[in-house]
View 1: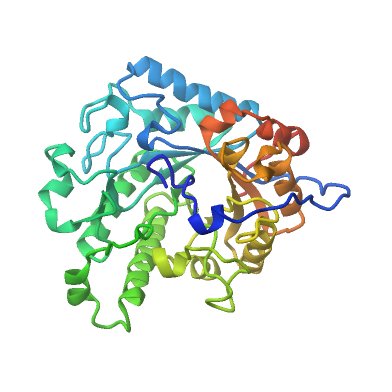
View 2 (view 1 turned 90 degrees about the vertical axis):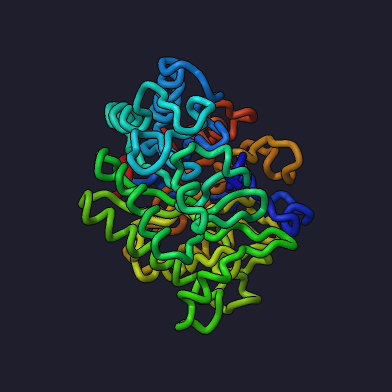
Amino acid sequence: MRHVSRRAFTLAALSTLATAPHAVAAGVRPPRPAAEMRGVWLATVSNRDWPSRPGLPAAAQRAELIAHLDKAARDRLNTVIFQVRPTADALWPSPYEPWSEYLTGVQGRRPGWDPLGTAVREAHARGLELHAWFNPYRIANHTDRGRLAPWHPARKHPAWVVPYGGRLYYNPGLPQVRAFVQRAMLDAVAKYPVDAVHFDDYFYPYPVAGQTFDDEDAYDRYGGDFSSRAAWRRDNINRLVREMAAGVRRIRPGTRFGISPFGVWRNASTDPRGSETQAGVQTYDDLYADTRAWVRAHWIDYIVPQLYWNIGFAAADYAKLVDWWAAVAKGTRTRLHIGEALYKAGAAGQPSAWQDPVELSRHLTLAARYPQVRGHVFFAAKDVAADPIGAMSRVIADHYGRSAKPPR
């Protein structure tokens, strides 16, 4: 997704399967923990959540941002995950990359204020944590390099760039790319007291039928010690994760590092350690992201798998995936939070379960049975604000009657 949609990414194989309504077993709800993640993603790519459109005056942009923070605080959420580098750009004054076009409509044009600095200050003033959300490798949601700012690093270093699926990406197989994207992201960590650094599900891009991600030259140059290109690609992503974690600890000790991957590591039919799912995408094989290893080795402080399916969904049952991820996190120091598809509640074309405003509340009731689950994050801020069928209101009434601190 993450053009309009990482979260809106829907597998054709999943969406065609019928579902039946399932209810969580009746009984007394377990009490909410005193400390749990109650988060919301605030997406800026393609003006998904904020700002409502590019080119608004600075005062109007700021007012819209404050409104999202106020809404999170009123709903007794405690964490806002703010997308500050959606497409190899910046929502703060960066010496490495241009200002985001989603602010002014023109990449590189100054917006007249500092969105990330304001978000950190105003979130903290409301008792909210602010997690800075970065996309490491996506450059643009188009393939026209002429639309990039004249001094954009992708124009200065064309060999770093791979067109794929109608978009532009940095090549994760180049060590100089990995070093550059880390410098660009860590600049924000050095400048602002963010509570965490956050990656989403984009590493190598989601597969596009009939297209090949052209990293042949990089593989020939750097992949000689690996048994396959897939193993080399996974190592490239592993290196990014380990190095970024070390950089965050070095620059701002105490700041956490979390990742929100696609919810299926591998299907059990592919790997007996995998989940009882039949997903058409597996992060290990298709995005070259060994998310299970990151948790088990404690390379990251928290993980938020995107479990964007309803309870009982045949190809990817929310209940089975919560159980699988809880088992993965058990005995580790990596916190497990669950990514929730609020955007599906009441949406046209979704299975009937998503037309029931109680579906999301059932998710939290079910997940509370697992001590490894330490909270939830909702996609996304625009849907928290609109809440068309009252699904978020039901979550708040059923589960968030009292405030809670985020887990540290």
